[in-house]
Image 1: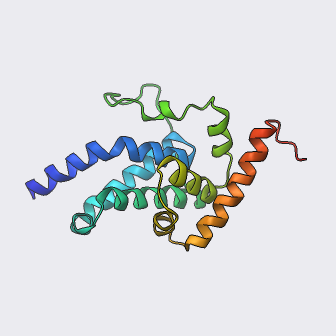
Image 2 (image 1 turned 135 degrees about the vertical axis):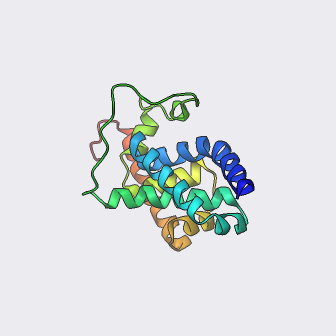
Image 3 (image 1 turned 180 degrees about the vertical axis):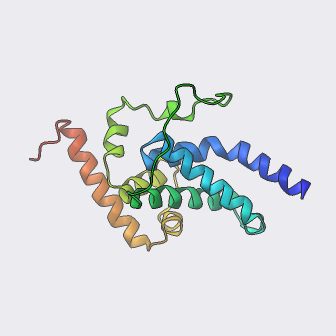
Length: 167
C-alpha cells in the first residue's frame, strides 16, 4: 500500500496543474473546478487498481474530472462552499494565469453552455481528438462534431461583435 500511496502522490503532483487548467476552463469557476478535481482524485484513489490498469492514467483522470465538473453544473441545487478571507497555502503556482478572465476569447468560451465549453476546451486547449473527447464525455464523435460546430459558430459571432448583438 505504501508503494501505491507514493505512486498516487506522484501522479497527483504531476497531473493536478494541467487537469486543473482544463477543468477550470470547462467549469468556468475556480471553486467548482477545484471541487470537481478533488472529487475526481478521491474517486481515483478509491478505484486505484482501475486507474493503475488504465492505458493512460492522465486520460482516465481527465475524464473523471471533466465529467465531475459537468455533473456539478447539472446539479443546480448543490450548495457551494463559502470562501474564506485567507486562502489555504498557495505553494503551487496559480494554474489559472494561462486562462486570464480579461481575455475576450476566454470570456466568450466561458459563456458557452457546459458541454460546448467542454468540447472546445478538450479539442483546442487539450488537443484531444474527437474520439478521445467522445470517450471522455460519453457520447458519439458525431455529437462532439456538432457541439464543436455550434460552439465555434457562437464564438465567431461573439468575438466578431463583442456586444453580443445578432446580425
